[in-house]
Amino acid sequence: MVRTRRSPTSKRNENLIIMVFVSLLSFYAGSLFSMQASMTTTANCPTVSLSVSNDHSITEELSEKSAESDDNNMKNGRFPETVHRFATGMSRINKDEFTNRFEMGVPVDQSKPGEEEVLLLYSSERALTKKKKAEVTGLVPIPRLSVEDATENCEEMHIVLTDHTNRKQCVALVPQYESFHIQKWMRVDGQGGKMDATEDLRHVSRGYQSNGREKFRPPEPKHTRRFWEMLMPYIQNIDKVLDKLRPLVEKVAKNNQLVVMVCNKGQSELLMNFVCSLKARGLDYSQVLLFATDVETKELAESMGVTAFYDEINFESMPSDAAKGYGDRRFVAMMLAKVFCVQLVSMLGYDFLFQDVDIVWYKNPFEYFDKNPQFDIYFQDDGAHSTRYAPYSANSGFYYVRHNDRTQFFLTAILMAGDLVIKTDSHQQALIAALSEHASLYGLKVKIMSRDAEEFPGGYQFHQKTGKYMRKFYRKELHPYIFHMSWTTNKDNKFLFLQQMGEWYLDDKCIQKTVDEIGAASDLQTECCHAEPIVVCHYRDKPSIVPCHDSPPIDKDKPSWWDTPVLTS
Image (cartoon, rainbow, N blue to C red; front, side):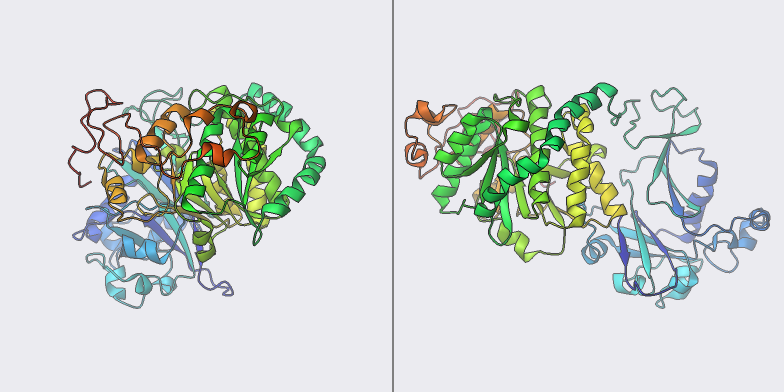
């Protein structure tokens, strides 16, 4: 939940509860109140979301008043007297205008018919807009106002992001001392199971699904003990490690900024390809600091001209081979290594860009972050706007952090959630859960760089069914900073996709080889890097810089990507 304060010195406490819920142009007060009345019975609601408002004058006197007829209660306006302490008027704002004016940091979905507007609920007469006040409070269609007019007297604003898929959901606003978390209730039995319309509404986790599956389960003692075993040497040797790391960070940092990467030998060709692609484009890589989790990768990085750090205390037991798939043992170990390294750099007081090795640059991304200084932390949009990653959908493989007390404590919180990383097989879920809490509790300023913008594409755009982004990209209509080959099962497919995308610059003789095996210890760039991309077709149904009609599909019976018509949605 995002909180915006227009007048922090004011002592008044006018509140505005805003539900991001689209109203139709013909949405009348009568139908709205009927919805409110049905929420008291919840007879047709398989799910209910509860939001708590800050006013709580619920007394026996008001309870008696609530029994009066609706006509008598509403004779003075849109809402009855029984709710006038937290609901006195309502207006509408264009959703795009609202989200452009109030940057919430979350990746906002594009507006579609039926979800084009924001509903604003005023909790005090003093918060009401002066424009169209009679319509805002009266028994007439809810007025549509500009964002400036609608919020002109709002000294505080609470924003609630709500479902817009037209499921049978009810939203209850409860007068009470306020909460900054939303409760979810569903019609399920006391033992769990699938949603059942005959059951009472019961409190469930936000990850509970209608099929009875639970997306969010807490770590078990075995996960916690396993993490403690890994954390103990880290904490016991933190000062020793920082003393060893400090001169390397000082060496690579410019304007207090550096690039942080983590790699093992199993992923080393992706690291080398990243460096080769930078060389081919004439981009500077002197700010890159690689955390190598094995000696072989450290030697490869240094022979490629990259500054590398190997921490034998914490990384000696890390696997050196590549993960076979998302979430396996090797993958999880590398996720924990990523948590360790960013926390170390943050403790030294630097701003940093963390990125995975399956990335290529088209221009220096620091240029973007230098021009946009208003947030503490920026993330690439993962693209999966699902409950598991709500509300931020942050991709944990590309993010920029400005050093301050808020971000340093946030990264420490991720470190301490290592058992959740082990439980969920990734640090992405733990990271996003912490983002939500720290944004609410400490005012951490988070920005997700939307999947609908052109600057920071990744696997979501590569696998996009419409094919719109990649076609515009190949026509040079878009000018991104980077490309991140995320949303890909394993390293092998990343390699194949990058090759046919025209983003592979590493010679085959240097793949999965040590420095000694390559035989050019002093200058691997000359030996391994191509000035032009090595383009090879592999799958006809995936984006490619040249037509791959004769290649097999990766998905059965799919036609050539080049022959598929561009979809409009």
